[in-house]
Length: 296
Image 1 (cartoon, rainbow, N blue to C red):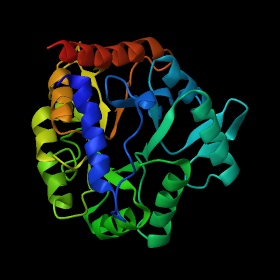
Image 2 (cartoon, helix red, strand yellow):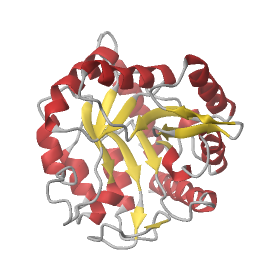
Image 3 (tube, rainbow, N blue to C red):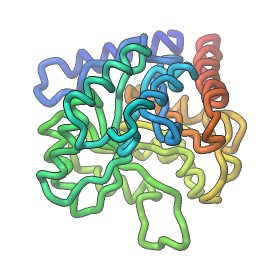
Image 4 (cartoon, rainbow, N blue to C red):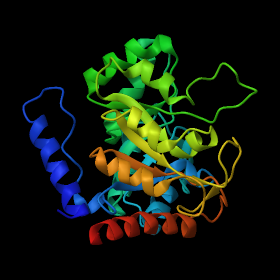
């Protein structure tokens, strides 16, 4: 059976398994929001020098089909005072959703967002994610927050992926770069509690990204897809997919093997004012990968 056919079959199978479960994840996302079988788009932080409306436009222009918003981005060129965050009004949320729909871009995720220590504040994050239609949030929690986060995952039926930044000698107490440590936080929790695999940051921390994905099989909630200049350097610059040292092909193959159906966000932290051409190249890489696998 061919590569794309397998992806479609996997999505249907997941939906069938989840039927009848009150705590089930939402049905798989349709083909109109996929590239090469994957739900592929951008992390809006890639366009943080622009507004959320412009991030949607640039995601669509690059060929992306989905978007992950981050907290604090201005709404639009005409309304820079209003921010995309948990304090947004229902009117603001509706404007955001309408804009995304106009450009054929699906809102899939929100983060990296801090989870407040108090339940009322934490609940506000999940409530906002639910309202914008996100299927997951991306977070960097502390161990004492895990119980509360799991409780809200179950209540709101919204997944949560723990994100990482690179390992740095100046921050010896920061452990989220280590996939084994993150897995220890979620391994006995609800299956919707897992990892946002930032494969570029893993590579910057000298972590084998494919091995990291294997640790979280069944708990890969989302992916921040990057390629970088060199491994082991926390400040290594980004490159278009396939031009750096990140094992992008191996990563995509492993996600396919795991029947991954979450979102892949291209996060490109370079050439901030003119990122669309390079992101389009990244989207083309994923499409080309799927075409090549299809022919094998």
